[in-house]
Image (cartoon, rainbow, N blue to C red; front, side):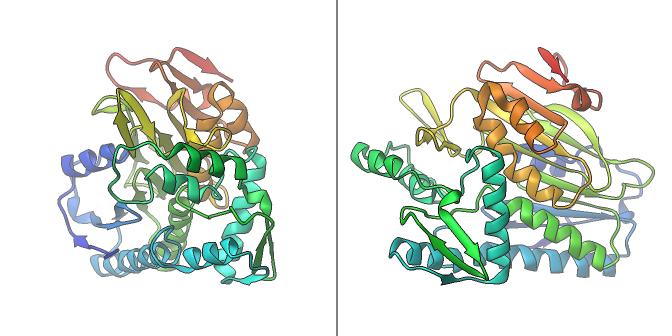
Length: 358
């Protein structure tokens, strides 16, 4: 996929609208001192990405953000799930029954981490479901409203691919299950957030906001105040709530409203339940805020999957990852939120939580 750069776009309502559409919006950017705010955007990972910096010189900002966007493009090409990449080569080798398949140190580390996250979340976060995702038509930037062939779907479900099937050691991968087909779509955006933060810091940029399709990580502040972001309402074109995002924090949402199709009045989203092989039901969206820690971006992306798929057990799955700031919108639109996150939210007009949990 070609990386498209659009430097120095105007800030304000355009940015807010963009991030809102992506599930989080970096609102409240204000009109004062715009010369201190630099922004670039691109299209990669199948979504829009934006990087904003505050109070860095234009030359420093341009150079740092350009390096970040090149890194995003590299990650996209290296780990694409259906276009030729190191990941598709690994999938082909697994399907052929090969053992001890050599992979790059980076991919080995990513798979080791993803396997641990999957185990913590009862394999509900399951990047091994690539074949099922393809059967449902989501291995495409544009997809048709079609249900999979029942026989093919039944066979894919019965194969039960999961991350626990993988052995990863010494930069080599072996799968005990040839049905494992890896798709890092629920992991890579968060990983890219962490890579971007590392690059910006190394380049001397200490105040920035990084947005990858609604997964957002903050560095430093925007002047005298924290960066401010919004949680997209899953059924209305407005934020459900806004909140300050502090230095080192990341926030991510899994929802049924970004990649989905409707058929015969039923919504089919891209988030598949490994237990059934079908698009998940019962939850419109789950948002997790990760307080400062190593790999906060990665966790904001990957940990939201078991919380989303866990349904009524969403809070339990968030706790397993040490996450206290979490919110769920159930199938009926009912808002449940943890007390820690509720204390930081400013809700949209007419909205309030139905339950506040410890």
